[in-house]
Structure formats: structure tokens, C-alpha cells
Length: 420
Image 1: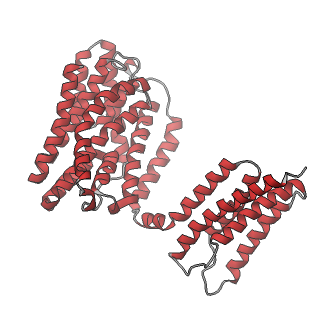
Image 2: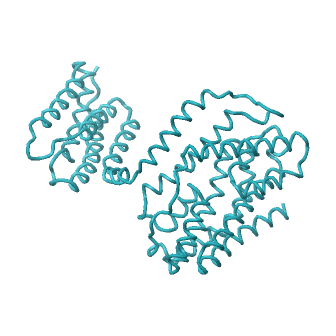
Image 3: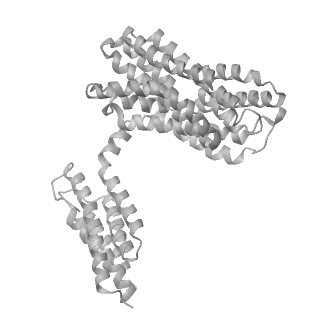
């Protein structure tokens, strides 16, 4: 039974609108590379979406082969263009895929799958619009980046499913699967920041650069910008903002990682971490509203790929050692030793001790006031280390700014330990 005409008209209007939007983005992208109106713009994509909708309607109400015929004809037309075009560049695989997706968007709208059609259309528009940006980004990827990424993906994809998921060793403190899972988690968070820096690059303001650098590695970002401030002392204020942002974003990054393991513990940890983040956020806000963002575009800090196999193995060993220490302290009732362990661990890596405590549900540390105190102590220790790096390696202008901001962060953490 055929669909009522008014409903079909609504489907055709929606299909035409979505196809026109896809074509608009495609035509805008094409005009940056070749002559305007060269191929597959607003009109063509509108027609494709209408063909998809009408093909789906005809297949349901008249002949079951209408939509397949539309797909075959459009595909044949595109293939013919690749053969016959001589002077102008023929359509490539992106145009071919975009055409078929646009046809299916029209068909999905007729079938009542409007949300799916919008999702596919939006994804197609994003891919069309980011074409040049993706090309620029991939040209900046080094052989080391590819090797480290493939190495990590291969190791994690093969080893993680194969390692035993059971507690081993004294007190059952070592679980190979959990240890490697923590490596994948932290490396993945770090890689997100690293990827964002490589994608945005020097076009990002100094504040955003600091936040993204902190997501990848707050220690490396602090080190890079502190050294750079000595080479360019007139940029000390900008570099100080980057260091403060990197050290501040470490707190929500750790909070996110712990929430994946122990939600209730992460909720309790959010209070001291939110208080400790106030000095860094306040300083970043002051500089932002003063207009520093307009003059602070700098090159990206030199950060190593966090998916490097060497980095992953080192973190795995550190996590296993600290997890063993946390388990032993819990099993033996040596609760007084947890805070010193956290302080020493914070000087090396903030993530290992945080994940160890959050994941160790079998000890008295997890989910208790002592566990919260231990992670705050680690955060204080880690911030103290970065403060020392900035003061030792940075210019005079960076020293007092970073010292004041991170000193206030440490002070808030100490105050919470004293009052909590």
C-alpha cells in the first residue's frame, strides 16, 4: 500500500534539505581546490538525496528494484566520469562515497530512520569539511609516531586478551590483566592530548596548548615551556600560563581515570581536586580576560608519543610495584605507610598511585578517608616536583608566576588534609 502523498512530500522536503547541506559543505571544500562548480555541489547532492527518497518510495509501493537501480545508475555515472574527464580532475573515492551516503540519507528518511539519516549526513559533512585539515595533520605525522602507535596497538590487541585475569603473587597483589588494562587506559588518555596537539598545532592559543599538553603529559609540558622561557624571556607570562594550565588539567585527568574504576571514590575525590584546581583556573581566567590569548600563539611543546612501547612498559612496571605496595599495606594493616608511599609515588607518576588505590577494593585504603588523603598527598608531591622544575629551569618571570600559582595549589591541598 502506497504512503499518503502529504507524508511523502514531507520526506522529500527533509531529504532535499539534508542533501543540500551536504552539498554545501562539499562545494565549499571543492572551491578551495579547483574551479567553483566543478563537481557535485549543492544541486547534485540535493538531487541524490531526492533520488534516494523516491527510490525507497518506489521500491516499497511499485517496484522492488527502484532503489537498487538508482544506486547502480549513479555509480555507473560516477565511474563514467572518471573515464571521460580529461582536463578537469575526475571525482575520487570521497565523492563516490559521499554520493552513495547522500542517496541512503534520502532512503533512510523515507523509511522513518530520520535520526540515523541526520547522523550519517552530519558525519559526511564533517568529513567533507575537514578534508584539508586532515591532509595537513597527516603530513605532520612522523615515522616514529606511526611506529609507536602500531607497536602499542599490536601489543595491546594481542597481549591484553591473552594475559591471565587472576591475582598472582604474595597477597594476590599482581593481576597481569588489570596491570596492562591500566597501561592502556592511561596511555589512551595521554594519546588523546597528544593527538589534539598534533591536530591543532600552533594555531591553538597558549592556554589551550597548556591544557592539551597537560592531558598528554603535564611533566613534559612543564619541562618544555620552562626551558623555552629562558630562551624567550619576553614570553614568560605566556609560558607560565601554559605550565599552570598543564598542571591543573592533571587533576581532572586523574579524576576521570579513577572514575572508570571506582565511581564512588572518584566522587569523593572530586571535592579536594576541585579546590586544588581553583588557583590554576583563576590564573588562567585572569590572563584570558586580559586578552593574552590574542598574542600568545606559539609552537607546540616537544612531547613524546605516549603510546610508545617503552613508556607503556615503564608505567606497567611502576603500576605493578605500587599496586603491590598498596595491597601489602592494606593486608598487613600498615596504614601509616600509605601516605609516605603516595608522596614518593607522586614524585614519579601521579597516575600509578591513584589507579592503584581506586582499583584496590580489597584493602582499607579504597573508598576511605585514608585513600583520599593518599591521592591528595600524591597530587601535592607531583605539583611540588613541577614547581621545582619551573623554578630551576625557568626564567625569572616564569619562576615567580608559576611558583605563586602552584604554591597556592599545594597550599589548598595541605589545608584540605589538615581540615578534612
